[in-house]
Image (tube, rainbow, N blue to C red; front, side, top):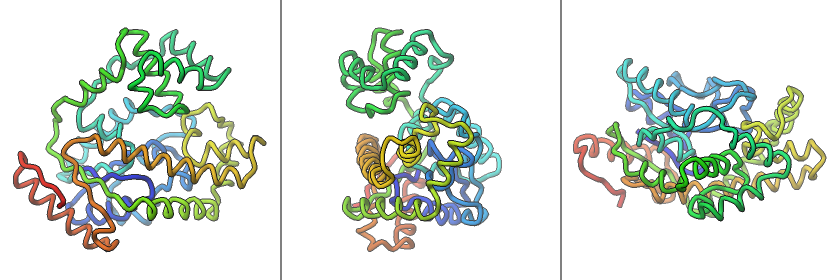
Length: 317
């Protein structure tokens, strides 16, 4: 099962209830919760909140380690096998759509190992002058990918440029072909959603709560360990903005407002991604008056129908 949706929509608490009812184990499909020492900014579930449900890919890497979709895929596939061996249901929970796709479509990343000289050159250019120049290159060579990659996502911009350099073909074409692959799994894909104004208010409130819980101190500690804005982990929402404040580039008030704005934009991009996915069941929280038990029962009802008729589709009409 996949349980996803935009950031702050309420996936975590619902996933626990789903796992309890279906004898499930949870695999985090999140690019930040994999890191140790990064609890507040990643909205990481704490041990006492897990209700004895096994969780995978949470707190397994140090924040200075590299983490990317190919590594996620390898670790998640190993977790899935372990869960199956224990006769439990693997439940992918998180908002990183590309990670979810990498599992469901068994995307081939075999050509993405190692660091080419061209990639190193692009990384140096990004360090020296930022990502704008590279993004303009991508818009020229692969405008479709440029539409789907945020200008500040340096890692993905570089990968797209590297792929074009190596193959003379846009990575967007490669990704489109990967999307058509048959999945090795029988699965149900649920997207939890909410009214935009309500979701955005939840995002703003959560950022305020993170600051109250000590997000600034968390970033100060990470900075004291030598972590910089060039590291993958510190590109996460909340971390990069507060690091910019600590580096003297912006005020604290501006940093907090940037976190809220960037998180809202991120939620919008997440929803755009999920709308492109096929065979997805959308669950609108407002339709159930925000009653989590009613939402849970609907998910279970759809799950039972789809598992009893694996070739059929079900729409939450």
